Image (tube, rainbow, N blue to C red):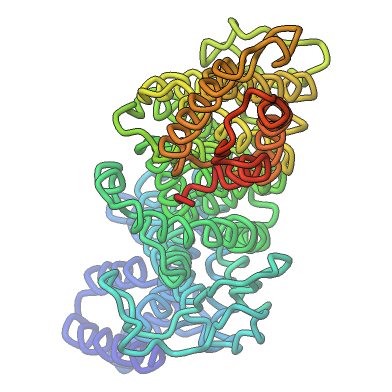
Length: 640
């Protein structure tokens, strides 16, 4: 094609020379113009063409003869070697830039293009150093810009659609060749063509090789030329734009919805948000443990020895998706601090905390350090949310109203909720102690007297404070009961339930032995208060002082027996639905009542039966065995 163009141009020269052959000076001027216009035509070629057209006239020049010397006033400036080089490179590069296919589809074309680019970069540097021809330098710069634009197109194409080799088989959990079905197309706008896609995995010890080795070598060669030409930032931006499609699609395929505002997250029902969190946690791990480290590895290979452009390219490629994941964590941490959210927030916190050390080598450069700081910040925010949720648990206990009494003095729902909540929370004891360390005064817990034998970590003090709040709340609720013995039963039941939950969990370690002794002492005190309150009248009837029943007249003893029967019926009627939930506690209370009542009752019956003054038709309504059986039927919550 180039030879045909040259022949046509020479033919035109011959025609002009034939027309102007009789005017030697004008012919020489025309030939000089053509020589300056196109570096492909030397003056020797042009004079030869003119001589052929003029049939060897007086102004013809043999090929071996030098061109005539023109008058100095009319002569154009001499053509320098740099001018000829720029024109030659313009001709060569223009051919490549005009191609309607990828230059890298043909390795020979790619090599030739890169060689021309190297020559052009060297020429521009030489012109810039010489500083003698601003016009020529501008022309070379313009050519360089066109060259870089085409290189950028080739660069992006090689990254997005590597043609020279098929990608290697992906590691488990990643599918780089699976076409996207119609069902897979989302509102994100992807789905026009197959793109390497990431799917959730359980093994994070894998690396994505998104480009085959040959493509990496090609794009590295292009990157080096663009950096050498002063287009390093443009190269980094092109790389980031090319990789962003892969990253966006990979994250989208994880099934998470991170691109939501904080208001949208806060307005979401907890069931929906909990589902999103359950997906966010493995997605966050996969993106920051696999996808982003793999992108770092790829950018380091492509921009090897071209710092800082590899760092710029890497952070620009991953920033958007990384920040969206981080912003979701921030939104959850700032959302409602209802106590039931604690466990999901702990899961999120642990996911972020555990990967922080692995991010140090990935985000080691100054450009990505801010992204590393964002991950660290969301970890801190989630930790603050955990502490806030514990504060909200305290508020929840305080706000729980004392309106309706639990039937039979049973375990209050708030006691079950708080104890099961704390017991489950202590399954993450290490994490809770970590986030609460150094925060002893956040809940105003400085008023708590901490015993030397009790653990004094932040978590231990927080939980002890919550237990104190719960105890005061239960005491307030006990006042709802009109019958003081039933209030004692209520406190006894709830206290015993608390002890059970503390004993079989990490709570026992956190609260310590001294706290446990105090709680057991409270339960014993409530038991004694019940016995004194419920059985006081019965025991007053059976008490006779030091002399026993021997000094009492029969009439007084019969009166006592009658009163005893009445009080016993009152107790049976009043306490038929009272309950002691713990089997051992129930047995202990029954035994204490039996030991107090039955021996005294036996003494009264025996004295009456042995007295000669007792009536012949003496009727004993309850035998000692009946009394014992009656006591054994108490505290089961149903009438017997």
